[in-house]
Image 1 (cartoon, rainbow over the protein chains, first blue to last red):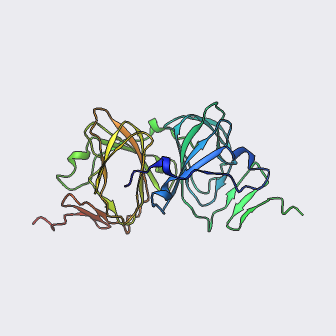
Image 2 (cartoon, rainbow over the protein chains, first blue to last red):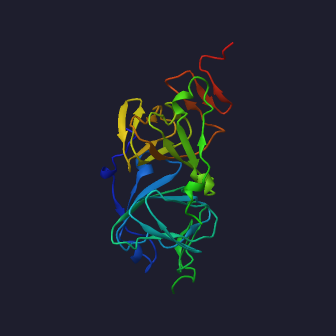
Image 3 (cartoon, each protein chain N blue to C red):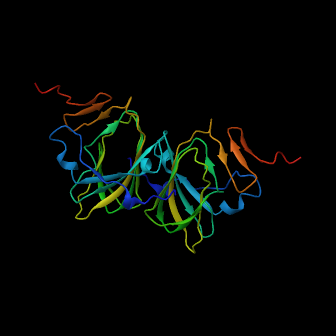
Length: 149
Length: 149
């Protein structure tokens, strides 16, 4: 049946960010709804942020389009040029290759939920993190400052 | 700014279906939110169905994944094997190549709104309409029964 039983889908949590950059996202959970529904041409995660949690470290993708649709609660979209409050029904888009690092911060006292839609081009994508000493490319995460030796 | 000013986006209406198959979708409007936000790797339309309207004729795509996220109001998802009520927050997926014709019917007395996300592969996609004498392929719409001569 095409309608998903969202409550029955596995709930993911955790982060493979390099330390110490995981701490702000550990109260984030997500369900991989598009994959659960058999889709392969784009991904969609139903993401819940507990109060205080971030969606990710602020980042932008070289080769992956992204879109966020706010479903419940509120979060602050932090981007290169300022902050915007996102409420249910609000939509934001992040075209591949646009160097505008972005993420969502739940600064409210309640959980918020959004859908994050994007392509998955890990064979060519690079993910840039302007605020921290981390970079992601097809070989994995590394420190921009070089390996800690 | 990544957050879209949805109220400022053009509102589309109409249909290029062959007659007489347009009538059920003429009270449908949509805004092309992903394209407006500069995305090219997938499409997303914010669709509003007036009371009584359908999202489309019942169809399935050979090569395009589709996903629907209900945002406001209610609609009935009609598919090959039955009907399912879609309420705000409900998500349905339609993988490319799965011969399960589907559409949404707004049988309520109020408008409903949903987001329809999908890839755009018109160079190879075929769209099958199991209920009616119409077919779409890269050359355009045609009647399955052949041209009316």
